[in-house]
Image (cartoon, rainbow, N blue to C red; front, side, top):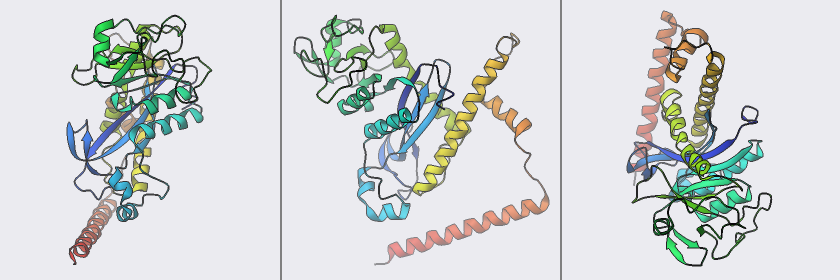
Length: 354
């Protein structure tokens, strides 16, 4: 992926998504919030990292979120095969680890974008330390400090100064314009900041174009020098492209269809799904390049469903339909289901035994 993305401006985008589950036996499953479910429910949540450019978006990594009760339950960890080195980590901590791993692997990114789940101070410091600009959502009531040292709620400060006051001027030309997350008159973050791009301690605030006023009307940004407000808004909008990546993975590569309960099984299934998503995405991008100038006027660009149909017809081998094979497959499936049923019943008997 580092070679494919070389030479283009890359934005690393993080988001989490949940899959509904019927039992807490699935690794990481529990009563927790998921936007995909529209609220709190029994689900399994994972954090995903995607690389977004002006023309494409591809998944790079994933991390299964292990709730605190799961991480502390030794019996459930053992049954699900959770490695000993895996400990509880918040979603922002998982995001920071994945971004660091992506940069170490050679991804040449310039920006980081995420919603308000990832707008905390610790993650923003980590992103600055990696010399990345960022745009992250923050809550409407997020406390900020203006250049005069006064504390405000983010929405009240924006209403006072107007949406264009937070343009990305340099530290020498704008006194925390108009807000800083590091305190009055500060020019460096409380942690040891990077000096490569002179961004330490600078943040500006702008309205999020599609957020609801009650939830997250602002975005915190730490841009490089000489970045326009239009560019910041464009980067903010990039973060919604990871939703398209999730929909593609769930709709065409079975990301949410892995009926697995163990740690290793989930890691393998999600890996294969993300690899398939990358192949589809890059093939679509190349197909547009190949047919760009010669495409008939009444022919829409190649879509993912059409690409899957083409692959099934032209590339993927035709499934075997022989009588012997079909009967063997049915027998194997019924045997597998019988074994699973027996194990399930035995486990329940053991749990019910006083």
